[in-house]
Image (cartoon, rainbow, N blue to C red):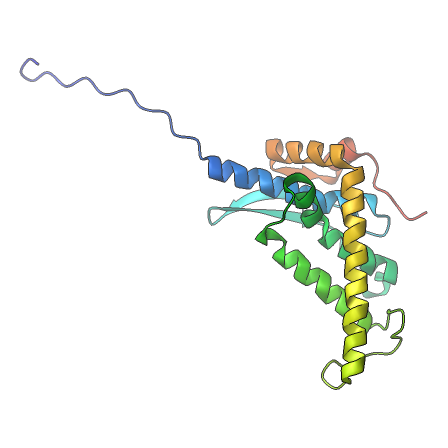
Amino acid sequence: MKKNQKPTPKPRQPPKPNFHKETQRIHTAIHESGHVIVAWFLPYCPTVLKVSINIKEKIYSGLTIQPKLENGEWKKENLLADIAQCYGGLAAELLHYNSWSRACDHDIKNANNTAREMICELAMGQSIIIRVDPETCSEELTRKVELEIAVILKKQLKLAKKIISEHKEQLLALSAALLKHNTLTEADLIKILGPKTRPS
């Protein structure tokens, strides 16, 4: 090399793809699409105004936004549909991956809380038609409460899995659109899924 001649710079290497990050992003899209599919095709679920997948603290998370119902609008059918929707992400993961992730933890807790509220506070059980205070009720009544809750959760999970299975193609189309655009509005969802199913 001649004196004062600058060394030839090495060509810049393209950044390596982050396969873990992209896998997580796909997983989030599948999970969130599951919530939307169940809400969209269950008549007593509120419509979906927006769904998005975003990165937060280096972790992808999803968000499904629906209009809030007033207390008087939360009938038994609405509460059962809400539980089924909670299981939408889990059902989608089961269909796509044959297992589910910790992303379902919050959904499972919400489903349990709603079912417990139905039985203990709203007396919406099959055999329990009075308000129940878990702190003071007998062992026998506690067992009945837990059985009623388990029956509700099992039935609504089965319903969520059925809806996801019946709308597998829409699930994949919705996931692909989410991966492309990150955020979809109600108008976008109508184009992909057709009109929202309403109570007859």
